[in-house]
Length: 252
Image (cartoon, rainbow, N blue to C red; front, side, top):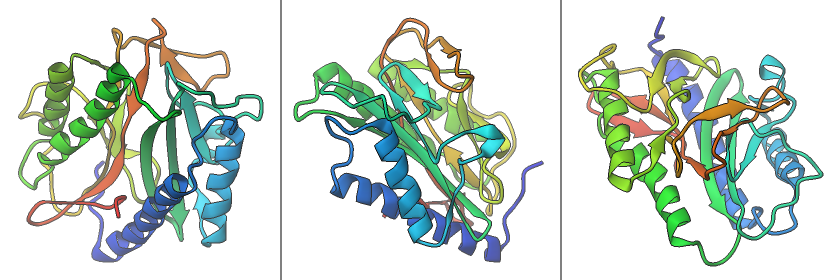
């Protein structure tokens, strides 16, 4: 069942999302994603920031997940478990996905970073594709439109860039729980699925690969990576459907 948030719930979710946007801004200001930093260092930074602001990491302990952030490298799409043994090196493509529980209100967002000064053209294209797909999808997140209008817009951007949609994964409702109805695929025909209504809060998150997009789950039970070893990128924001359009809540 899709939960339409009340004005009071929306304000709580908005505060959680603002804090998450500030976290990603801090990650970038501190140049945290750089050579020699471990994925566990990133996780510790994320958890410390969240707790210092009176909130809790939404990912930590969720279905048994052992960290506050998912830090996925290169061919890994999502759910990479941070480790002190994994040091970032030049050329790594790093995806950080995390969420905040602020007084019971949940936010969720993800960004992709490159380690190094000069981003190769193919990698830049991949990074640009997920970001462009998010913005193309969110332009369809309007009251009265169908959910799959978002999905179709995302798919069309993947086609434009010549990258593959990772079809097993997608966005979701969020706000009072980390994962709520509805599931938001990143592909499909338009004009299908539930009608979008004001008060819906969604995590829209394109995930693309340079290869064929087929994935598998690693032996750790969490990390999802491409079968062909191709690079992946991920871009996610929590958004609100309003009476007149949409609001991106996890951006500053």
